[in-house]
Image 1 (cartoon, rainbow, N blue to C red):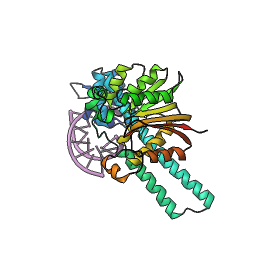
Image 2: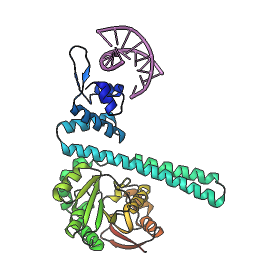
Image 3: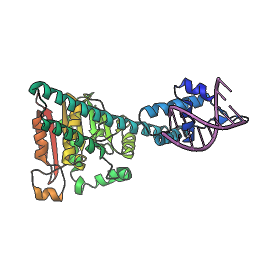
Length: 331
DNA sequence: CTTCTGACA
DNA sequence: TGTCAGTA
């Protein structure tokens, strides 16, 4: 078929089709005599996926890569691209949600006070701007992709930051004690050691990590584990799905503001009575000097958040920095 | 009338 | 990507 036909079929302009070809996403054959392009059924399918990915917001350059993976029947890579795209959309969704909430707040303010105090407007705008920037500034500072293959080895050494690692995981499992069939989420799952233990108890686990290499290891070790690319600030799930959220040795990578955002995110994906269990390096109390040396989360700050949001806390300190916090909704 | 390439918005 | 021009 010729360009007008295929363009009409897919509801795009012939110009767009030529443009995609120019960018190397498509390579229809041309007739010898007049240079007219000829499109096959495969080209239709290819164009369709280009359009779909594009509508999902993927840049043409990335679509090109994804298409190359498909050509090489490299499904694993393709899945990676799709999941990457998914996290992008999820972040966008969160931002939109944020704006909606801000607007709602303003509406509520307007209703109750009948005026919109200028300060409140400014404050709300600033807050939402801040949130947006924090999400945007997320990056993989720690090159976990490179570390993935050696991670377990390092953890097994049971020294430094990972001392008492196994004991900490065991305590999380004990406190969470999932009922078989319960849905759990492990954020910053790494190579899945914690999620794996919970699976063994019959929980249906999902693992989120920002490193696709880590997730690859997860999948290999625990085939039943569902893995998704994502991070604390943009958990790649719709809300209200999980009975519990756990995380070990990951939370301390966040700044204080991000930690509070992350807690909000956890609560978002939890069912109404969902519980949270964190094991991480923290400061037991506010201490400006210590906090300068080790930029770990500050326990009282987390406590405060949990209290403010109606959680009951169970807490255990394993060593100088390692703390386990278990939070259950009071009602 | 259709398509093509190239230029420009 | 849309649009316009000048062709084959």
